[in-house]
Length: 476
Image (cartoon, rainbow, N blue to C red; front, side):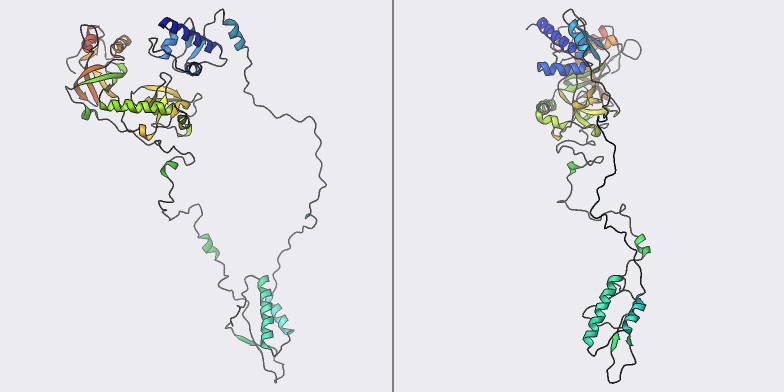
């Protein structure tokens, strides 16, 4: 299929998707619907456009774009064939946001008091208060009516039985221990007995004395005990009973990170520009982000870039699989500087990123992130943010900071939009050679050369000066 045929087919699909949608259509939603219907992303790059927004704005006879960014609204241009379809979609009943109220039943009866009686209700009685008796008087009265026998064991058994009964009534009264003769003062009872009978000595224990084993703790000592909430265990634990590191985080305890995912405080290793580059060195580079001729990021084509491309291929395979769906980063864990993997609306490629800004009260749940390997700032939906696995966090960010040497803006200190666009066309999607003139504050001052250009001047610094958008500066 030629380019015109492919463009016409894409325009028809996009127009039908926008017309058939009753909800609000945005650029981001249009990309998802296209990918679901066609099985691939919108081929704007094959049609010669840098991003999806510029492509949609180039077909105003089919689609009209209002706004900027991935949340810009998209409207379909009405045609004679699609006018009736648009009217039918607009007339569809939209679900209301009102809450359903519970309706009152049609048949109801007045409530009456039930005549059911519980089984234990008639026999239930209020507990009687415990009355304390004078145990001393009771003991004296009981011994007055006591009939003494010569058998000592029989009398001792009666006393033990009496002590047991008193112990049940008064828990603080100590009882005579079994199989042990108490060493207490003796008392002789009933002095009017006949002399021929041997007197019986009763060994009694004062009732007012308390058993030290049943002695309760003083109230002052209980009040001094440490509070339960201030208690701290002194047990340091062991390695066998310790909680694994991946099951806890310093902020959350009920949400577990995946075993192989990095935490919120993890940082990638950094590349030292002074250690990698040196003045007057010649390298092969590729510019990946261009703000103006004095601010851009570039890659160095070396062995580490080959390792990064192999890692990137493994990343695409993993996060595009079904296992990648369970690695979505929850909103409660998204914080500033948290490392993650995102898929922006501009490209279907998964890239390593760092959270720059996120507002929990944002209605659309958009998250602003910085792509670590290009330095570009993008906004993505929260469903497109995944955990970054440790195997994909071993290489440092690939982009380095650079600027053109020996050039300065034609007027003033800022670059015009025309100069930036002209410079972007010179360097975009090309592998260039660069000579390092100086290194300052981590930024490399470069002289770029395009070996594949057909222009007579291959030095891009001179080309920009000759175009009239820049002037020569005699210091790097």
